Length: 342
Ligand code: FNR
Image (cartoon, rainbow, N blue to C red; front, side, top):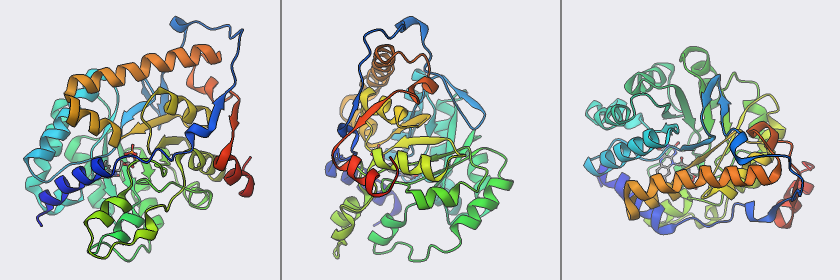
């Protein structure tokens, strides 16, 4: 199978295996306030990540790139939507485009479609400093995302089996790449121990990318003749992962992602301590089934609904949300209690 066929295959499997909605966010409840002292017209969705200002905390998180015409079109369409909604966008892994320079055109086209917006380059933790610089140059990136994807690699018959030296490579990239660096998971969640290791680095943020949304173990296992099905339910649910990351890396900014679909998911993630929230699979699904207009509508709706919820909670800013109370039940509460994180 060619690389471009594999990318399309990924998209189809990612969409058909769907999102499990096991993020744990439905086990959280806001505490209503009858005298919030707030007004919908007097609150701000803006947030700051790595010294740059975002007009709202939501963004299109890394998905596809490289490959053939179909993935190129998806990237350009996502970039146009990001520009229309004034939200940042991360492109998918650019590693293949370094090895096959003809593929860089699809990434450059995405930047062209979103010339003034914030764009995040994306590469794996196997990258060298020079590779990191090259992917940033390719899209004139405002940030670099470095993804951690141990489980997907292990689940892929042709995937990596050696994950030594990643932390040291990330540290070297942070020092030399020249743009703020975000380390992200890919749907299995950053835990306390990993966050503690990352806390030592000069990062712009850690993106938790928890379990409960797109599941790349399930995606790879669907395609594999020898599926590693024990990885299908492996991972740290999104709600828990935000708390684990905030506790393990108290000096870092936290970005929430993994199965986020709507404003309620986003606001709960922010109350748990995140400063921004990335959405991937759910947005891709809307784009491919409803088109760009439907996707713009959905993103604008999230922003409008966020303001309604912030008003009801008496929060004028994303920082205020961090101080809102939240009732935590079910397995999320149990997990946090067992880990001593409550
Ligand atoms: C991804 N994701 C991803 N992440 C990354 O860092 N580099 C990549 O190239 C890709 N590629 C990719 C392709 C497709 C089709 C999807 C759906 C996702 C992972 C993504 O950024 C995110 O971490 C997970 O999908 C979990 O978030 P959602 O999808 O549950 O919102």
